Image (cartoon, rainbow, N blue to C red; front, top):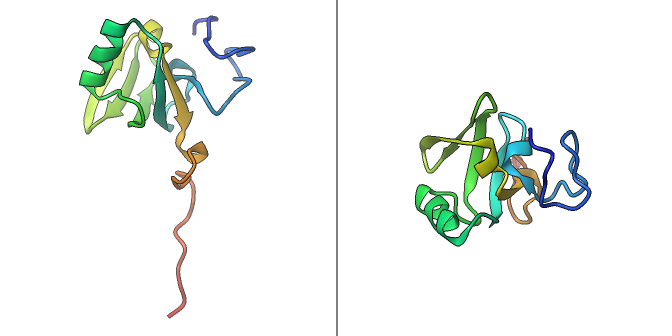
Length: 109
């Protein structure tokens, strides 16, 4: 993965600010929420048209040659360089949204 990161003090193996991290640093199988797009204005608009708008949920499926993810019920591949411009937050860290590992609470009858 690329060494450049828009998050200060970020390293490839561990983000110093895990609340917001580039999409290409997320592990496969993780669901995240898009927080900010940092590409050019034209590319940001194209990403939004593809479904990568702010507050959209995205699931990272694979980190092989390109990043494969699921967004809006579609599977899309992104280059590592483009994925680096999409800043995301893990789903469990978004205020008001349940953690993906949270268990449902059963109420007694």
